[in-house]
Length: 245
Ligand code: ADP
Ligand code: MG
Image 1 (spheres, rainbow, N blue to C red):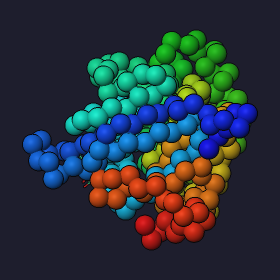
Image 2 (image 1 turned 45 degrees about the vertical axis):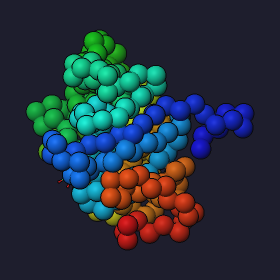
Image 3 (image 1 turned 180 degrees about the vertical axis):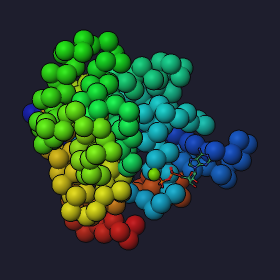
Image 4 (image 1 turned 120 degrees about the vertical axis):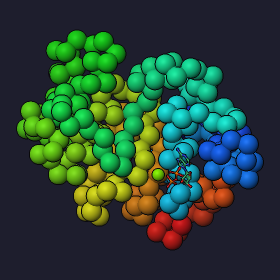
């Protein structure tokens, strides 16, 4: 856990009794069943679980992309489950950075335009947005690709651009949903190292669903979603073999 003067850092994400069912009226159909979790500022938290266990569902509820059947998600003092769809969109745009498995870059925009988008959406001037995007492109090692379109880039490069886009508006919380799931092992490791470096350096909170075993020992907390519940991985993270989870 990230600490300040020996005390735990404040809680930035507070999840309380969160349930989600995609089948209205079916109590046994809950993908998530009364999940509660505190995530502290600056922590790196890993979410394990077999495919279909509900990792994306949980991340989508935290980002406000989806709404729970019951329960609450409080992020940095805002109960996002109490916001309407427009308010959730604005909150997500301002406060959350998301890295997806399939990169989700906009194919008709250049690399630079993809990275500046979060700043332009919130009304920053193009000049300022481009200045900051170029700094981040430098950090992810792709400054020379600013004017290329995403389809000219490899998967690893596209994910590095997606990381720059997720961080440019300096979000308090970064969510990553199997960010290496579509990359080969070596490329995935490099992408994870980069994401972790950039979030740690800036003290941001990172919640990541992943199967990559290399990164698990670096996490502050590891949880597994199992039968709709969130189970802390109590063993030393080093003893966890996520490919067997
Ligand atoms: P994971 O990310 O761990 O692979 P998901 O959260 O994507 O799992 O999915 C959990 C379960 O919820 C799966 O059984 C999936 O089929 C189901 N599911 C996910 N999204 C929807 C949806 N929009 N409508 C109905 N069922 C869904
Ligand atoms: Mg998923």
